[in-house]
Length: 69
Length: 184
Image (cartoon, rainbow over all chains, first blue to last red; front, side, top):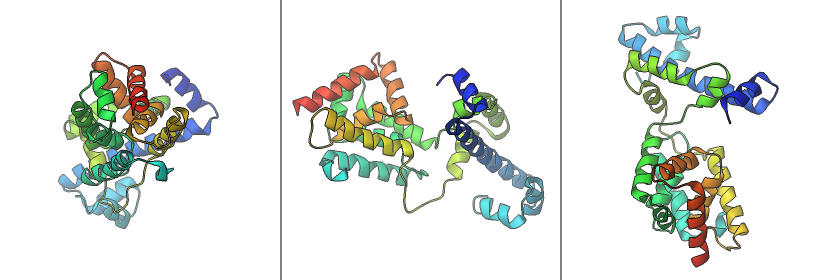
């Protein structure tokens, strides 16, 4: 699909393309979150600081990223 | 459908699961299938060779793609005004080369069961239709290859670019695979 028709579809009312865009955004956001949380922790941020910045509970952020970092 | 799979086709699907396990993939998509189709003992490698593409090269390409993780949907992102290339460049500057790919791999957990993605299921389904269209009783690895080529999927796009680099195209590979099918 060309960029032009995709833009049209997203602005239009086709759920298929709209949901596809939502999924892509979520995927990208998840990756950026991983990178940013990792870096914040390396810079000495506490889990509480990270949680506050993300607007979620400390438990939530620790559960999602704690094992990895 | 699976009861109609030949030994080679079963080996390719089972092999795709093993590739996913080894590479810690989140799910099994058509790129995993391309790895095992190209490396397999069936007739798909011969069809690739007939197009001037080395099966080992295709398998290596597909394996690299699998290692890079799930593919971000650049088209869908551009539809909502996000330039993935620009975001990638920025992420590379801050977090090092290939940061977004790395982040995807890191977020994958070890798991016991690997689901097939929708496009992989579609490719398997299309392989059945290819077998019916060609009047073949069983579904073998060439039908799987034809199914991957027919589906709009990452594995198919990978094959397409490999064929293009070798100065060939999808139509030629389809013809080669079909010929292999008839000769068998």
